[in-house]
Amino acid sequence: MLVLIGIEPETMKACVADGNIITGATYEGHPELIQLFVKALGGKITGSDKKILFLCGDFMEDYEVTVPFQSLEALGCHVDAVCPKKKAGDTCPTAVHDFEGDQTYSEKPGHSFTLTASYEGLDASNYDALVIPGGRAPEYLALDETVIALVKEFMHSKKPVASICHGQQILAAAGVLKGRKCTAYPAVKLNVVLGGATWLEPDPIDRCYTHENLVTGAAWPGHPQFISQLMALLGIRVSF
Image 1 (tube, rainbow, N blue to C red):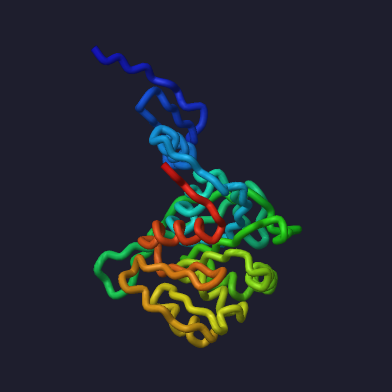
Image 2: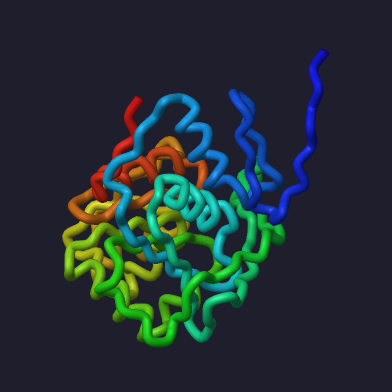
């Protein structure tokens, strides 16, 4: 007879491995859940001693910040999320953009995303890569001179930069797309082309591209490619 013993989760991030059974309390525990699952499969992660910075803002796309953030944590990277005029422990509201057969994406309220570091006093030299989620936030972040300076610093130092969906609005505003090849959500094509980049069609919508130190994607369905291509630039490998 199978006897199950329940373990009360101390936090919503709690995960437990018992033999071949791995369980977690909520989605907040995905990083540890994935780590335990990879370990159970005999996997080995190398090259994950990296520090990654996420450039966040109010009503960024829920999946486009949460999935890459948790994936990089699961790989063993140190990941920080910052937002102008906010500090560690503050939150950003998010929006869920979905594709439901209409002429453009629908928009629904997402989860609150907790920032892990303060924006004021941020030193880009402490990080190995920058990730820019899409959603609504890039519309106003592209007007922030400190954001523009931050993006320029990463691009000019040739550190990996991964930007998805509407995040490329910030890259265009920073003037760092000239001579680049990239994609974005189709509605952002004009920003990309006027920014001097060669437009790469996101067909299908999960298509992502890497050109030199820049990884770009069109939307969250491309997360598998988006994360894999960023891993390649960072030298992170998962082997079995």
